[in-house]
Length: 317
Image 1 (tube, rainbow, N blue to C red):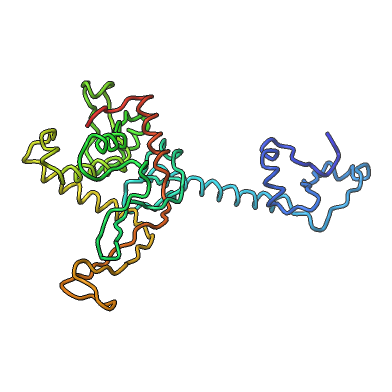
Image 2: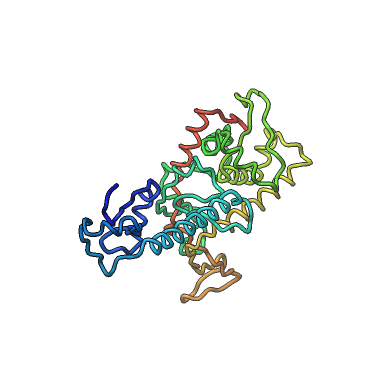
């Protein structure tokens, strides 16, 4: 048996917590001291002399400090674990988690990698001539048209936006969505010509909003689109009203704070000596061609197409 008075990290558990001792033990020479037994006191002459630093923390005090930090850390980890297990992103009282740049807890996790931010100037605004005539301004003829007289070109552009908007959901996504107790359990789609693989399907809400916008567009030209509408007549108004309110909520939810300035425009009437005369109407024209901060649409569209190719998608809807 060694005759030395110091015993440094002699037990396995002491070796495990040695780094904690170094941080929180506040020991000077990083040394533990043990009590000398009565048998060893008689051999004191043969024991080498050791200098005990004045700033050395007693063994019991160091252990007490370690225990406090250890149990505090474990308690905090347990609280964090419990909060994670009971955390529900679909609870309106839950703290909002995420950012516009990286995605939110209520968004599809797999889609978040496709989120990239860019600045984009809005186009296709209403402009005015000096005589007060208003007209739609399209800056670039090569830009796809989504409004105008109905025809195959505009329809093809909308189909390109919306195709495959419902994708086959993964098991992890289904489990995540099932945590939303407000809605009934998800239902699997049966095999159909438009559904290659039976299962549960869903897609980003941005595509549903575009679908609603396209439905409103078609109702501007019912004489052209009505023959191809599959929804029974008694449900069409309900569908359009749903779309209007869906878009209202989406616009209010995203809350774009980019300013729209107003330009006074006299529509109709005449002008003499720089003063308006006649029955002209003062129209406040919103100048919407401002730079906006957006999620890059092309990357989101690419993610939807990739998921559709890998797992399947509803071909038409």
